[in-house]
Each structure stands twice: as structure tokens, then as C-alpha cells.
Length: 505
Image 1 (cartoon, rainbow, N blue to C red):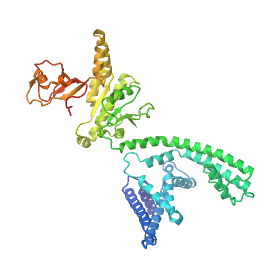
Image 2 (cartoon, rainbow, N blue to C red):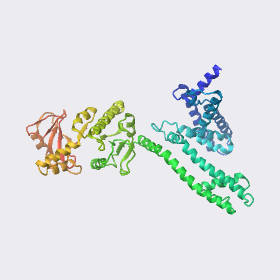
Image 3 (cartoon, rainbow, N blue to C red):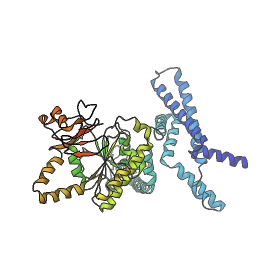
Image 4 (spheres, rainbow, N blue to C red):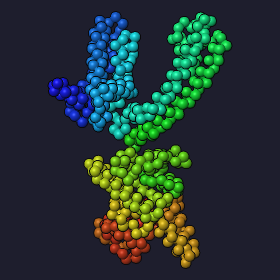
């Protein structure tokens, strides 16, 4: 008895415990046999009629099918009802639990597909051998994050009661309609010879296919047909509702998988979306061409209906490091963390800082891939409360924008100096003159006077105006005196309609 118990334990681990080594060995063997089976199917299809190799290929295929049949039987027999690991049961109830749990396991969609493939042992059902491909696809490592086949199967299993109800309504309508039609038409309709004919007619009618091979000839038969037509429309509507409810969320996950598996690089990720994000995206359009540089909006709710199709949407939580894979962050050019307007400034800034810290932690964890980049990912964070600027910088933001402080400063300055807000808005708003950073062309290897540098560059003749300097240490000097010494590595801050100098890396 102890030997049998050990054997069952090993078989259970081999077929139901993915973390064990024996499970990986068994699954690898099964996948190898499936590939061999598909190859034999392809070889048989390519061989000319009458070839002497066809019986040999067929014999190999039958052997493989029998192995698969044994594998399915062992998989079902070694399944353990989870409830028996929690509750004590009387012997009779325990046996009932074993039987019902294994029956339920065998009726799962994945098991049914495997059993259908084994039915290819019958000559008339040899075409079912192609179903074995689904075994490979549903476990394929091609889908790194979400396997679409697994998502669909999970949706079917999770909503099994809904599908059982829909199939029950459909089956009951077919059964009652077919039997009733048989008794009504058996004596007058030459196309009806058995209950099976009546069931076939009912199935064709309920599904609204209407082959026309069997038609009612009596008045009562036509009434039954009309009722079944109505039942068919209701059944289709019911199935549409069940499928829509079950699979929509799964389909969204598949769309996320599509972005992960895409070849998008150098894209811009916008973390956060609210009513004000439309203004950000409009301004961003004037800086980057969305048709060339893809813009991905990343937030934890469903795609807004008013978001233009030009922008990609990925649903996820940017505060969770495990979710950042969804937007191919290691391949992005820049990230904008937008401050939320639907919460208090402190709460919005706390979320911005958390997202910023999470992004930097994610990039450190993927250091090998990040180090291969020519330019590091640039992270811009929007802060609503000026007290949190330092926290955002400490969290890892390359640039922190105090949007409320900038706006209020312009308003206050316009009170004392009329028209300055309008002038500054022309400088700040994309599409008009804007502020740029640029490297000094033919940069001197020694310090040079700022005034001499301006004369040498003649940037004003090209439509630019130098308004400041940024030293190699990051310190900025606005409107420096002409006698100021410009050291090597200094960047120019200039005003222009478009970039005139090479941008820093």
C-alpha cells in the first residue's frame, strides 16, 4: 500500500506540480511528442498517394495518439480534489468527492481539447490531430507576460456558471423543439424518420442556420418552428452577453501583450491621466510628432473615450514596479509623470514621487539593459506643491516642473508689470518662441569671455537670443555680464523659434 501511495504522489507531482523537476521532464517529453506528431501529420500530407511510407507514418501517429491517451488518463486519475486537503470526509462522501472532482477536472476546456485530439484514433476523425498544436501554443514562452490562449481559457473557467446557463437554455430549447417536432411531423413529413432527425432540425433552427433539408409541413410544426426561431434569437443574444462579459477584460490583457511584444522604441510614456492631460498631449504634439515618436498614456483605469486614437493606451498601475514592463520602459526615450488634478496637491505629489521612485528602482533592476542605451531615459515630474520639489528630485526626477508656482508667478508679475504674462506665455507655449539648451559650437578648450563668445557665434543673425548659461555643475546663470568667464563644457540657454544648436546628450 505504501508503494502505491508513493507512486501516486510521484505521478501527481509529474502532472500537477509545475515547480517540481519531474513535472518539467514530463512536460518536455510531452511537447517533444506533440512536435513529432505534428511533423508526422505534415509528412503524411506531403507524401504522394500510394507511397510505401504512408503506413509507417500512420503507425507512428497511432502509437503517439495512444501515448497521449494514456497521458490524459493518468492526468485525470492523479488529480487531487483540493477540498479533501482541507476537510475530513466520510468514506462514501470521500469517494463521491473524488469522482465529482475528477469529472469536473476532465470537463475543463483544456482537458476537453486534449481528449478531442485523441479521438483522431478513429479514422473518420483524423483531422482532429491538428488540435495538438493548441497544447504547444497555450504553454508557449513566446508570450512572455500574458498568454492569450491561457487568458481565454481562464475567462471561460472563471465564468463557467454563465456558460453553463447559456448552454442549458440552448440545449433545452433544442431538446424540447426536436422531440415536439418529431411527434407532430412523424406521420406526415417524409424527411422525419427518427427523433435524431427532429433534433437535427431543431438544432439548425435554433442556431438560425436554416439548411432547408428538413422543413415543417403541418401547421403545428410551423408554430414549433416559429417558437424555435424566437428562442434562437434569444439564445444568440444570451451568448453574446455572456461572451462579452467574460472575454472583454481578457481581450484588454491581450492588447497589453501586443504592446509588450511590439518593436516600439524611443517612445514617450505619460504616467497619469485626468481632464487636464488633453492639454499636455496637445502641447506634446508640437514638440514631437506622434506618428513617428509614439506617445503611450499609462494609467490604472480603462481607456477614455475622448482620447484620440493617435495615442496608445496601456492600462496598469505605474506605482507598481511589476507593471512597468507593460510600457517597455527600458526602451522609452522619456517619461512624463503628470500631477493628478482630481485629488489634493499633497496626495497628487505623493503619487508623483512614488511613481518616480518606482521607475528609478525598475531601471536599476534592469541595469544591464539600461547600460546598453546611448542616452539614459529622461524623467520629467510635475509637482503641484513647491515644498515637494526636493522630494521629487531625490526620488530620481531629472527635471521637476512646478506648474502651479509658474502660473501664479506669471499672474502676480503681470499685476505690477502689465503685459509680461502675455510675453512669457509666448516664450513658454510650444509653437511660438521657446527656450532651448545647446552646446557651444567649436567650444574653446580654455575659459573665454561671454561677450567675445556672443560676437564669435553670431547667434542673433540666425534668429536666436542667448539668455543664460548652464555650467558643467548644473548651475544656471540668467543674463550673465559680458565679462563672465565661460568654462569648457558650459551649455547655452537661448531663445528661438526652433533649435539652432546641437542639443546635449
